[in-house]
Length: 226
Image (cartoon, one colour):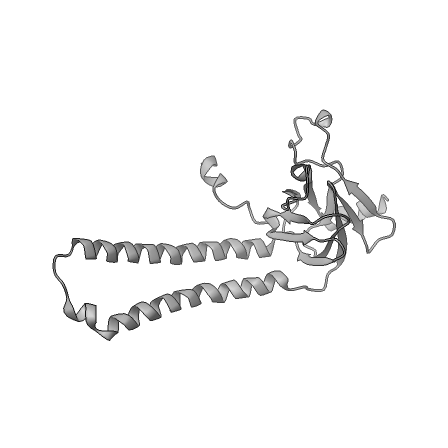
């Protein structure tokens, strides 16, 4: 059971990721139907000893195998375009956080609050304990409130990085001199892990991202502690 679950996506934590998983399943069903039909037709052609002259030469069969793929592409394209629009939509955010990529760590700035800025480094191997994830834990998590519409501004100070959290369905490049943005809303509390997914240098694989989602009242207490 564990092996089968590892072959699937991570549990969705945002509405966008839920839609992405639904679209993946929707597309896989269509692909299975296509593959089944093609295998049936191929096996029928190979096993059949008779030749149907009307089936081979008539224009009806030409129309069928031209229109059928078109309809299948439409069934895939419509939800795909809808999902693409949702991923780019920017609602009115309650909270804005700026994530800056460095070689090789992240820094976060809560632009709606003064003097809240910190750096997030991977935990040193000497500080790892039984509750830590090797090469994934950081010393300062990015703390966010759950069920809150947020905006993440992403940029870089040196080379191109990529701020990526698979369970959010979010991946955006951090480009020097350019400010990219994504919208984010997390459905449940927890700690969620990601990594820089651009080959940004020698320590590219040691640039983890940890986002911790907590209820809004605990988030306000955390803010007031600065």
